[in-house]
Image 1 (cartoon, rainbow, N blue to C red):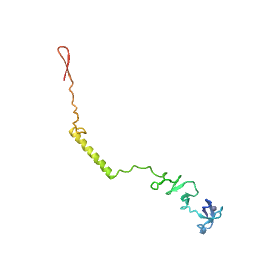
Image 2: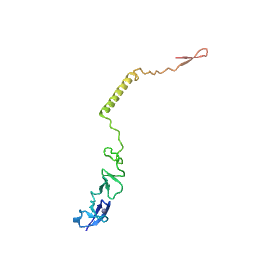
Image 3: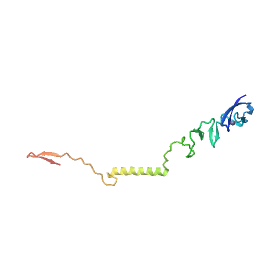
Image 4: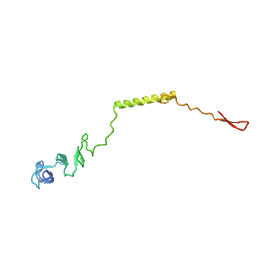
Length: 151
Ligand SMILES: [Zn+2]
């Protein structure tokens, strides 16, 4: 006879029970309280609902959230995400309008810059100071022995 696993909700306990295969899906009497216990299906009864929350059998004190194991209950739902599983918040994507505005601003800045370069003016439209190479002053020694500086 094959061995089957059963779970007693009253005792919160798991027990094994030998029985014929044809009776496997029938409830088995709990060895402690003798109430009917459900068979644990290895694949899809890996956890049960208790206190309104899915709990793993045997209970490890963890919770299940959207098929992921977590240590604490989700107290605050953000888009149904558990805080332990939630990914760090990402910056909101700029809207199409914001992107267009930025592109326009860059375009204007670029054209203004090329204009200023072309005409040699600053941002206020004033001509930029033109740097002229100053000639080195000539020093002439006068007949009187005095040094005179001439431009
Ligand atoms: Zn029991």
